[in-house]
Length: 258
Ligand SMILES: C[S@@+](CC[C@H](N)C(=O)[O-])C[C@H]1O[C@@H](n2cnc3c(N)ncnc32)[C@H](O)[C@@H]1O
Image 1 (tube, protein in one colour):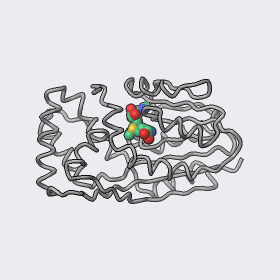
Image 2 (cartoon, rainbow, N blue to C red):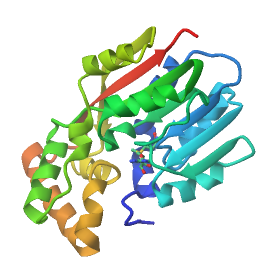
Image 3 (cartoon, rainbow, N blue to C red):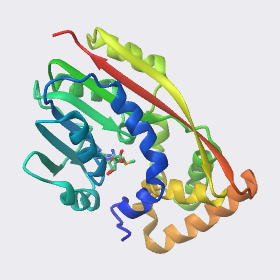
């Protein structure tokens, strides 16, 4: 079902297997311990929150997302230990409440990462762990062309926040150090996706980055936007089958000694 709050769980999950690898790579950075209390910020449809909860043996898991469509889908995974709520991760701060603050592929949607990470770090208890993954692929034609087509079609295109928000890996390392984390791991990783064809790139970005234009375009405008975007993208990248889609991501983990 397509939702005009932007997010469509079915479209997002078309590439679930490929999208999952960075999630598990991020999970691997978290040190084991006794049944942690966990918050998953920008939890999406809750499927991965549920897996994270099981993997860590979490005493509690709170998933937070601002999309009613995603939180609606997440209810399927709710139980006595796993709960979901609508909320804005940009402002999220619950001092000293969690052992793990986790955010996979969501922080890129909000500005001021120094401020956001400070609030999230403040939500950790003693020896709590922060684990965050953001895409860093703004220079790929798939992203560049999306902004160009939006500039052409919209009188007042929304600021290209997703691409502007993400900082350089070394800047995240500095922020984590400034926040007093004694241990940290920050890395840029290239995920080498083999898609069935170039056109699949359109389906990929329709599930995520193009969502920021959806509300401004409306239903008819959205279809026209996607058609024009597809034409331009295929002209620029060529029609290949399979198509190699390299995707850069930044993974970061940090812990304070108690
Ligand atoms: C790319 S999805 C990632 C979902 C999930 N973490 C995963 O790994 O599958 C990004 C999610 O961030 C959510 N999101 C974006 N901005 C948000 C905000 N300001 N507050 C809460 N959620 C937000 C979207 O609604 C979407 O569900």
